[in-house]
Image 1 (cartoon, rainbow, N blue to C red):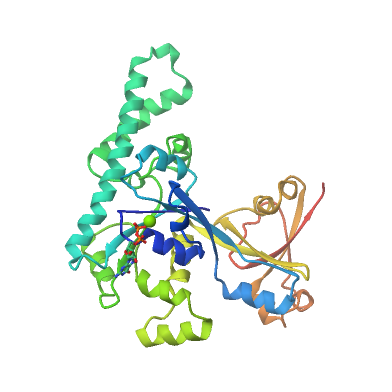
Image 2: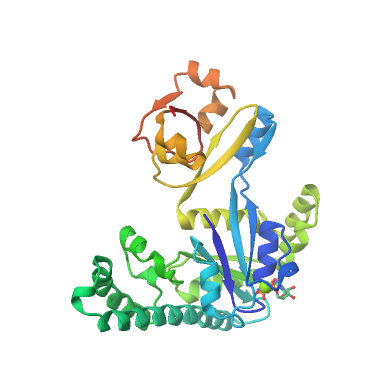
Length: 343
Ligand SMILES: Nc1nc2c(ncn2[C@@H]2O[C@H](COP(=O)(O)OP(=O)(O)O)[C@@H](O)[C@H]2O)c(=O)[nH]1
Ligand SMILES: [Mg+2]
């Protein structure tokens, strides 16, 4: 799971990237894109670490990509760099623009650019396909001849491809195009300290289907420099319940339908990120390909049961809540799993 950060110049992309990853983006301003990892905050994970006291602590990591100077670099090179991103954080300047209409305009400005850029790709492809003789068309070409005109209509109406109600397999078949507007998007309004309400106004008035979240990058950047106790005090004094960091990560998880499961032991406690609905063998494959191939069973206890049953696996077992699950088991958020496999 990778998140790309997009936004007009000076909207606060790099500031957000630094908050999320602790990596200075400006240090490598010669690159088109900078990558960094955000550790996923999860109280359950912290609890497990406390209980197991493992040698190695491995929280889930989500990569974020910051794009430098959109508009200065050609879209194509940015597109290539972000082709692996599963979702987009669209950062909107809500701190220098006092009026919500202006924020909405600036959101639309970039969104229209992305839509136009996707449209050009489709037009080029269709032009090439219509020039080819019918006989020369591959099965893939034929399915594209069917689907692309429909997508073109969507884009020409000024709508992103994510609004085209595509099936999962259609999205999969289109992946080689690396369309911008097909990716799920979380809109992040970067608000001024004294104008937190702007994000709500944006959400109300822009009428988007995409989720909208307000954060103040400036405050959050100051926050990142404080220790935990000072952070709490600082946030409380501003009436903020939780740092943006956790909210953004959770927003990205729900945007992309991701969940976490855990593997535990004295050697390592580790959190894994998988798509919701993943079956046990595939989840095992997140750890190692061999685990998927040689999958036999998954020994599963849920985190809540673990806590309720005295915080030991033995307690969970004697309460009859340890489960041995097979190939069809769908992993749940908060499962603690030991895989049995044969290689
Ligand atoms: N006042 C204010 N300034 C901000 C905020 N977020 C970013 N900035 C400033 O805006 C400028 C551009 O930010 P940057 O993150 O580099 O934007 P980018 O071009 O989108 O990467 C920098 O000088 C930041 O310090 C904010 O929430 N409030
Ligand atoms: Mg930047």
